[in-house]
Image 1 (cartoon, rainbow, N blue to C red):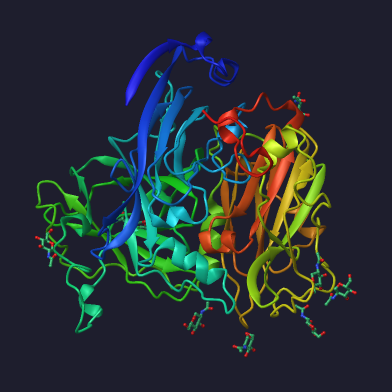
Image 2: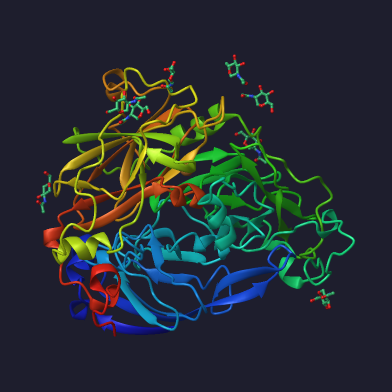
Length: 575
Ligand SMILES: *[C@@H]1O[C@H](CO)[C@@H](O)[C@H](O)[C@H]1NC(C)=O
Ligand SMILES: *[C@@H]1O[C@H](CO)[C@@H](O)[C@H](O)[C@H]1NC(C)=O
Ligand SMILES: *[C@@H]1O[C@H](CO)[C@@H](O)[C@H](O)[C@H]1NC(C)=O
Ligand SMILES: *[C@@H]1O[C@H](CO)[C@@H](O)[C@H](O)[C@H]1NC(C)=O
Ligand SMILES: *[C@@H]1O[C@H](CO)[C@@H](O)[C@H](O)[C@H]1NC(C)=O
Ligand SMILES: *[C@@H]1O[C@H](CO)[C@@H](O)[C@H](O)[C@H]1NC(C)=O
Ligand SMILES: *[C@@H]1O[C@H](CO)[C@@H](O)[C@H](O)[C@H]1NC(C)=O
Ligand SMILES: *[C@@H]1O[C@H](CO)[C@@H](O)[C@H](O)[C@H]1NC(C)=O
Ligand SMILES: [Cu+2]
């Protein structure tokens, strides 16, 4: 990586920097060169065909300061697959074409090509990057972005050390195989993950394979790369742990044995601090927690991840919380923590409720909205194929990315009939297995009036299994939204709207809708572009659990030709 010092006036987008952070005297350009490759690795001791960046998964951490410009040259060295990389939590103000969402904001990066992303990190906090082509994130294409506050700016908490930890779940089958199963008739579900990874490391019990023909080269517990992640701490010091989740499927509970943690940041926003014994975290979320190394320093402790919200079919994920100078690999003398009961959704909903904006950093939401869109989350079957849908519509991508089609007036390359804003709230029974007869697939999108205030109500329902409703973490590109409320059962537009938190709601980019519950969000459609809003569970998004919002596309600047080359832009020049 190279760091160049450039006066802020010379940067494009400097108006963003100066408007939002007038205290910054200068911003830097941080340039990265990445090569994306297929490699065999053993992250949980089991051999897997992975996607790495510069030989690593998680990939290199992007370390920056508020206002910096990040430039990443991404070379696609995969043999047969396209890629795209999304910068999760970065709003891409002024650069909607670098959001990295294949089919929405760009054409895919073809094998052999190099694509350059360039954007400003305009807010401090904990963010992520990951593949956004098909389900490639699940093969290991992801990493952390850590944006620090400008020099001289003090955060509302203090700590001695700062660490980033990505939590994940892990499948031994390749993403192509998993995706093919989901798109087949009969449907082949991905099943529960084989292991849980902490910062890219897990431990699959090779002995459970128990096959007389087992190739010992396939599962090898002696591989150093699958020894547990070790977090070494100095007694008495306070650690800021930036915990994020990029699971394919699972909701995770993270716990450090014998140590409480104080939640201080969520998705780049300061939280009114509160203490928890363990943290529930959903795919796409990031948190900072403070942990003090204040327990008996003569031993090590377990840090664990456990599956919640689905009947766990995956062993506990293990890392070692290592008190210096104990040996880092010395196993704690205790049994690893097993987390809360998997189906205690009241416990998880209570933690969601407790996350409020820090009292000194409240950004008040607009007091009313211009438009309310209610999104019923259901599972559906169409011609024998299994989908997820919102308001009976399962999302499919058009051949020409929306941003290009709309900005360049390429005609009706997607369904122009807007998707439904609501469902039959009077008659639909969210507690029953749905009848599904009217579900469709479509690539239609919601067009929002620029700068209007939009409320989204996520309404959960029963899946296609009797007495089953899943947790869905919804992630919005290009914005932060206010989380106005959570509830159980069916959202009531009169009584529940009156209970919205307009005082100190947290702002986030990813939020769960709990089983048989609802979640209410508000955002301002003030970022010209075309933005995905989707369930962050890879399998669900693949099965259609996504919508797209367009706002102010006429205000978008000139598109770089590098994002073109597919659909109606086949043959356009690509540098
Ligand atoms: C297992 O991994 C260890 C450490 O990398 C290596 O020395 C050994 O040869 C491997 N065993 C097999 C059968 O591949
Ligand atoms: C954790 O917090 C709980 C509740 O505030 C408290 O009872 C407990 O003593 C704390 N444990 C530690 C190890 O600080
Ligand atoms: C959780 O599931 C168990 C069975 O696995 C069941 O006995 C229990 O009643 C469930 N608890 C809740 C809160 O649903
Ligand atoms: C979706 O279909 C179900 C029945 O298949 C129907 O009850 C419901 O009203 C439909 N919803 C929308 C938004 O069309
Ligand atoms: C499905 O149809 C049956 C019979 O028409 C009805 O009783 C039931 O309420 C419907 N289920 C849902 C979820 O609407
Ligand atoms: C499906 O849609 C058709 C046409 O809109 C309607 O007549 C029918 O009642 C719907 N079916 C269900 C189960 O809602
Ligand atoms: C957007 O709306 C807000 C609040 O109504 C207003 O202050 C702001 O000037 C508007 N911005 C633009 C670009 O129209
Ligand atoms: C579903 O839940 C209801 C209410 O808790 C219960 O009466 C019913 O027996 C359950 N059905 C099945 C198939 O588990
Ligand atoms: Cu989902």
